[in-house]
Every structure is written in structure tokens, then in C-alpha cells.
Picture 1 (tube, rainbow, N blue to C red):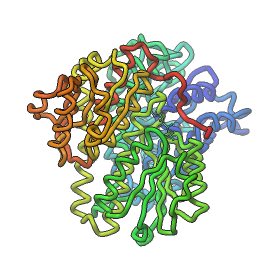
Picture 2 (cartoon, helix red, strand yellow):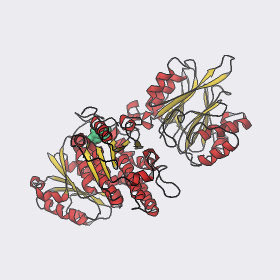
Picture 3 (cartoon, protein in one colour):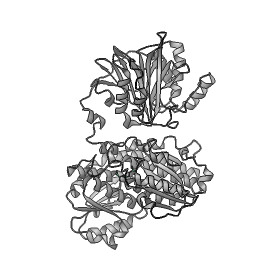
Picture 4 (cartoon, rainbow, N blue to C red):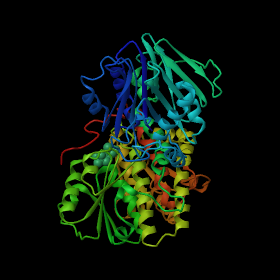
Length: 616
Ligand code: AGP
């Protein structure tokens, strides 16, 4: 996702754009930019474009003392899809003559052919992005129409894909042309001007009466009004929506807390993390790793180092890397890794996983591993973070800003990214054929809809399970294989947001000690999804049931047998066991949050915790 803001009116456009972009940073923040209308010494109108890598705050400092008189402009905060985060790739993008500027949210699927066509007609491109083709398409159309709205409408007829876009022209001072297809655009009138944004949160201070543009609708904004038209250019009167959220709620998109909002964003995180990752020939594309297939093939050992939830993503990765690439993979708590003098050779790959990208333990481990000669990859959610900067290559999880302290959507983004890495290693080492990679990639993408099914259909089952364990003193999470890996994550989630003590064990370990904890009513949350070890897990559960445990089972849709031993069943759709961590984690996140809410806890900011731990 990216964030768009635009304004034309009586006030200082720069201030309005920066404030709006700050509100939209959750949509992406690897770079930001604005185009502001200015007046040249000869009195003609110009467009002053300023772009900056990093967050909006950096752009604001760059704009200090500039463009204070401008009353019309467009702004953008980027989350990179095509082209790395850089000034050249930051929006706005401009026409060859610099007199037209556009900002865009979405993906132009046919941008490569459009780019070739435009270049063959003499257009010069300055970025790697798909968006830049829009600026040149509008430029060509404007030469024919001499009308910005008509030019934008024509430009959109050439585009295959999704766009929410805004454009300005130095030849039409005060006018902003807006178009929407599959990417959100909201417009509205304030007392002192007209506004555009990707999300209502960015213009709610100016107006609560907004028009959410629909696909194929266009808007022409001036300082005194907004004209709406359809794709034929005919006037329309779209519905006006009154926003009754307060700003805080609007930032949560109507959800009661960020944790639930972010849990519900997970289908998008899966889809976004996979965008552009598989070529037409079935080759995986993780070009950020900066390693050739030959160099990857030389890797004979992988360490995944991380902390907390990110460490649990590593536990999932271990199963996948060893299954598909057939090389040893060890998962290490970063705080331990550097103090035990690990065995590292030039063919060792260290993968550092960190949502914040600034966890001190993980950073220290990276530095140590690099001194010992390891190749280090970072998997992080924060562009330009220390982990990203200090790694040889980096994969950005496409989760966007995660506000709740308890990691949820970034965890899913980490698992999907690590799954891609495992598939790549398997493909490079000849253990996975191109056909197998294509099939796995497709099934991996299917988990987005499976998560949505869980969110749509299992909230009641989760609520009832939460009621059953909310008053317990302690709980056990058990599973085998992937089920064991996410049991550790489930226990951490429950602990950190509800303060209910929880532990996780491989189900087979119960009889070697932990089963001593079981007394009547003791909650055991078990991952009993269909897997090669399903029958074994069920046997372990029967041992718990025999001692009076209250059993909450995560099961595969259609499994009726599990009801014979479980007090509560939460279902997930059938999925390949390798991908079950992605979907089965969601009920555990929801369960932790439900229990926390029932226990009156602050799910977004649990006591004693911080979103990033920058001390060792
Ligand atoms: C998980 O919900 C916690 N927020 C915490 O365990 C976190 O995963 C850990 O501190 C690591 O943070 P990082 O991913 O930013 O490195």
C-alpha cells in the first residue's frame, strides 16, 4: 500500500500534505515526496518536486523554508513494490517537461510494455517504478486535450491494474485531477479548500463528509469545488459518506484496537509479500538477497537468529529449509547466539529476522556473525532499519507499519518471506523442480483466502474458547512439527497480551514431565490440524483428557473426530502442512486477544513491553 494526499485551496498546501502523509505512514514509509505549485520569477506557474527516502519527518525537514506560499499540491508516502526505496523511485513522478506530476497507489501490471512504447516515442524515464508511466501517459494525452482531467481519463484507458492517482499540471494552477480503480481514494470539501487522500484519516480534520470514489469515477478538484465524472466524462453525483469516527478510531479503521486491525490485515500481507516474487518462467525472484544462484548453492548451513515472535518464525523456517533444501538449519535466540561461539564458515548463511529491525540482541548477533565471516540476510518490516543496513541482503516483509506491540501481521510476513527463502534454496540446490515451486507458490498464495475464511467464520468459536480459559492460572500449548513451532508463538501471544501464564511443548514431550501440571479444568490448547503426526497428537491429548484437562483444539475443517476429545474446536481450512503455520497462527492470535480483552488488558500496549527492544 502507499499513501496519497492532495490539496487545493486557500491554505498552505505543504503543511496540509505533510500532516496528511504522517497520518498515512501506516500504509508505507520507505520514501515520501510532494509536488507543490510555485510561481517562477516571470510569473508563470511551476511544479516544485521534493522527494526523500525514509519517513515523512525527513521530508518535512527538507521542506522547511520552502514553498510556504503554495496553495496546491500532491503528496505521497511510498511502500515499494517496483523499484527499491530511493529518491528516484519516490513519488511524485513527472512528465519529461516537468510540468505534470502524479502520485499513485496500486500496481500497473502492463507497465513494462507501456514503458517500452513511451520510450520508443522519446519519453525519458528516471525511475524503476511502474507509476512513472502514468506521468508520461498523461503528458501525451495532455498534448492532445490541453485539459488535465481529460488527459488523466485517457491515460487510464491504457492501464491494466490498480490505481488511485492524483495529478497536477503547471498549466492548470489550482487544479487536481483524480482517478480510481481498485485502490482507495477519498475526496472532500473543507471550509478552505478541496482534499484528496487514500484514507479518510488524512482529511478527517478538514471534513467529515467525504466521497469514497468508486472504480471508474473521476474527480476534478479546484479551490472552490469538486466536479465528479464517469469514465465517459459525464457528470455524476456520487454518494457522500459522513464519518463519525474520531481520529483515534479512524486510525484503527473502525476496529476497537490495532491488534485486531492488524490481525485482519494478514490476508493482504500474504498477497503483498508475494507480489512480483515469481517470474513467468517459474523462477523465484528475491533479488534483494544480492546473491547469485551459484553463491546460494554453496550454502551448507543456515542459522536463523531472532528474538520473541521473530524467533518463532525461525522455528517454522527450520522445518521448511531442512525439508526443501536438505541443509541443516538451526534457530537461535539472538541473545544466546553470539555468546556461544557458533560454528561459522564462508558457506554459512545467517538470517536475522526482526520486525523493528532495531532489536539490540539481533543487531549484536549480526555484527558478530559478520566478523566471523558469515553471509547475513535480514528479514525486517522497517525499511532502512539498522538490521536492513547491516545485512548483506534484505527481504522486507510487506506488513507495513505494525502499531500493536504484539507482533501478528509482521509474523505472517516473516513466515511467508522465510518460506520463499526456503523454496529458493530448494530450487537452487535442485531439490525442488520449477513445477514444484510454481505449485507451492500458488498454494502459498491461497493461504490469504484461508486466513480470511478463519477471520470470517471462527470468531465465535474463538470467543467461546477464550471464555473457557480466561480465568485459568496457566495454560499449555502443544503440537508437533509445524504445530509445535506455532504453539510457542501461541503461548507467547497469550502471555504478553493477557498476562495469563502459558507454556508450549512439543506434544510428545508432555509425558516426560509437563503432564504433571494437568488437573481438572487445566486448559490445553492443541494444534491438531491434519498432518503426518495428527494421530500422535491426538494420543497425547487423550492422555491430557484422561486427567481432566480442558482441551481447545485447532483442527482442520471437516474433522469431526476431534470433537470426541476436545471441549472446544476452532477450525482452519485444509492446507499443506508446510503452510499450516500461516493459517493456524491466526486463531491463536485471536484467542490471545480475546482472553486479554476479557481480562481487561490493554491489547495494544501490554504492561512492561515495548514494540522494539533496543537494549541487550
Ligand atoms: C512479539 O509479539 C513481541 N513484540 C516481541 O517478542 C518481539 O517479537 C521481539 O521483541 C523481537 O522484536 P523484533 O522482531 O522487532 O526484533
